[in-house]
Length: 523
Image 1 (cartoon, rainbow, N blue to C red):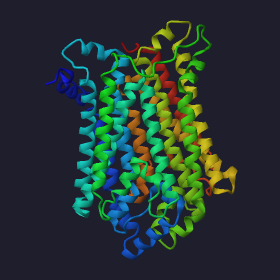
Image 2: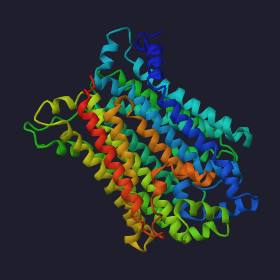
Image 3: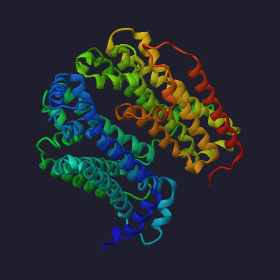
Image 4: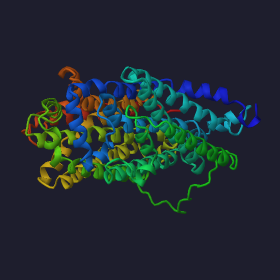
């Protein structure tokens, strides 16, 4: 074997062992989301005439095309690919970027790669192992999706599975490039996430302005390529070759960069700070570290809220006389008028996504501790609780800010009842705080299991998003804290459940901080 790749097999086995929990959970959750959708769509639109009518309606609505893309076929399988294909590709891309950055730049940043490189490990072995680990994860995901949908048409199922896997691996290769450009794992993830976000925006803008998705903006996005594979609607197999070529090209760039730098160095070195410190408190440090994340999430919520709001006036036309669709919106948004039920459902969806922000922000404590950056701060005149409180203020206050911006966007897009719509988004805050409080408790009491907070937030999102369509029993829906909030706007504001959830969130935070104060820092 070429000396540059020596040790690749051992590093691959190590990466798969370290991700033995995260990978299966992510893969199975994404697969379940995809393969459970056809049954739900059959219950909503059981006849071919209904599916044809809804396809025409959706293609005529620019906001829906921006959100999901154009509909290329009116079969249940084609509607499944339309409804979930791009979002499955997004999830695969996020999984891949996390895997690649974790086993390349993060290993260098923590110093572990230097120890490994003292043995028989080639210069390009870490990058190769990381890309192979992402390929294993994406390959399993694509295989499970293809197997789960094979009964709907083997060719279409295979095309969708390969397209989702190829999209994930493409952004994994992008993460490989970003890991060479920057010295920070966090910045490498941020760069790759920004590229992924730009790809989604390009696709959305192109689809919004084109009835058939033929816009140049759509074709400029890898997510547009996934869409145009047209699974179950006259597959375009050649686009899978385009995805494969893009993966090979980006991997070649990453390998070229990896061979031209020293271990631990990058092509975009970290800018040195001022000669004298300008941060006077632990809270100011936390704000400095997390301000980019808050800004990114806030702007994203503002944009998504605006898109959701612009869809509201056409919801009556979209639902038409379909009682099943109306029932789904009523389960998600309450028994009020259809417009209010839709707004409440979108406010709830924004709240469930905001839970992902608060978990990520709380777990920044864990990354600061495991990266040995907390200890130097705590060695000064800064107590543990004061240090943790700085990050928690950003986490819980930032959740309120991003939900407010989401409500502002929802109100602007709708154009009516601005205060009530924005208030409906803020009403999701107690449930978001409960999930944030659980993350604090896990971090403080069982730091090794802190990542389980992601699973809890993901389950809450899945229950709120897919539960109504799958007719899950109310007992299962009640496992999510969001199920206990009033469905605003439209329903009466009852203060009891939000106050109870707020008290529960405070208790979880207090218990987590008490446990953190008593335990040792991670070595």
